[in-house]
Image (cartoon, rainbow, N blue to C red; front, side, top):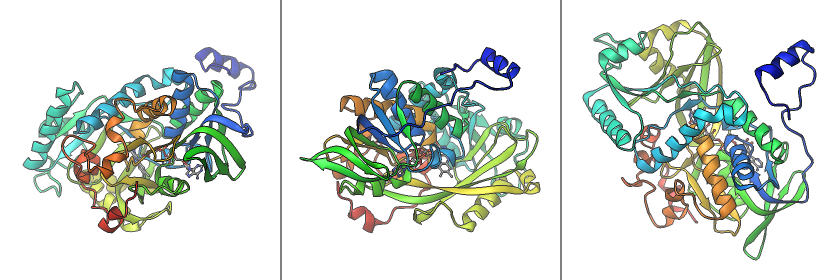
Length: 437
Ligand SMILES: Cc1cc2nc3c(=O)[nH]c(=O)nc-3n(C[C@H](O)[C@H](O)[C@H](O)COP(=O)(O)OP(=O)(O)OC[C@H]3O[C@@H](n4cnc5c(N)ncnc54)[C@H](O)[C@@H]3O)c2cc1C
């Protein structure tokens, strides 16, 4: 594989851009792999990469029913940060953030990680108290967090509505300066290319339709391209976690919900940090191409449709315009949706399943992009060793059966994912009571 470098670029430029290798192969599946990862999103591809790189397990296939990165990985609003309040979450996400910081070098692929700062706005005294508490919790664990006054926020984002009669008055904010954005497609492509170069087979257009078992152990998968044997199988399919686990007769405490996002026409730089809010479900950033990327609430009912309800977009747009009135002058260019894997306590599940050799990485709700490298790293550890990595140990599936919180504070759904999930609606108790592990 040609290493990407300034010299390689120059050479290709002088020779008419001929001679570039394919970024990854397009292999036919073989009959048996040591490990099969189901799902070619960022998490699945990162898992395959770390299996090969860290654990030396190279007889690995990633099976993707569509095209790699075509799920939530290519549909998210690209926000990367680690400032979750609860310790198990911020430990895992901060480990991931450390990997983000070196990812382009590690993969020899520019993932355009841009640590432009991730700012939470506080709109009331109580918001500011919560932000201060979160900042304290983060700093106690050595994670950067800076509480900002109203004037400091005004200086950082001059386009915010700071007038006395603003619909959402800004009292201050909490910023993580190491947070920011990354190019989502590049993350999938970078991991795919690096994993492929280590011998991993990335097989697209290959839907897993069955999980083959013998004597209580997984022995392979049925796919749209035939049966493939495997020593271990890792499910990593985000919003499809429920249906795929059901192929092995397992019901998960995960519900699929639609989450939408949208982007405006491209304009000159006007917002150079990521803006979120402690009280609103609205997040705003500007992409490197110039579009303002906006997101809001999930649709809050179970669905596998990758398109959502217009009122959600309208609400997110209204909140964004109230925060940054200049946005009202822009036209919306595109909107899209993904199917999120909403776990019943708002925290991920990285765990062995009750079938030997079968594992799950899911339940990331709508905050898993930022976890991608860390999630892949700890899931590879689980698949390679059969034991949970210390950062993943709090996120075992049996916590639901034992009513054990994944975070110290408690298992209430809206507490464990802290910021992202603070405003999540309760999942329907009827479904929750049907949970079978
Ligand atoms: C609109 C939106 C905005 C978001 N914004 C953010 C954000 O700003 N920051 C953040 O951290 N997170 C965000 N998220 C969440 C984040 O995108 C996800 O948590 C993360 O990308 C999940 O990655 P993944 O690899 O697990 O899943 P995916 O990228 O969805 O990959 C799963 C793959 O599995 C494949 N698959 C499914 N079933 C099968 C099968 N039977 N056989 C084979 N393959 C199968 C799918 O085709 C898919 O490609 C957002 C999500 C959405 C939808």
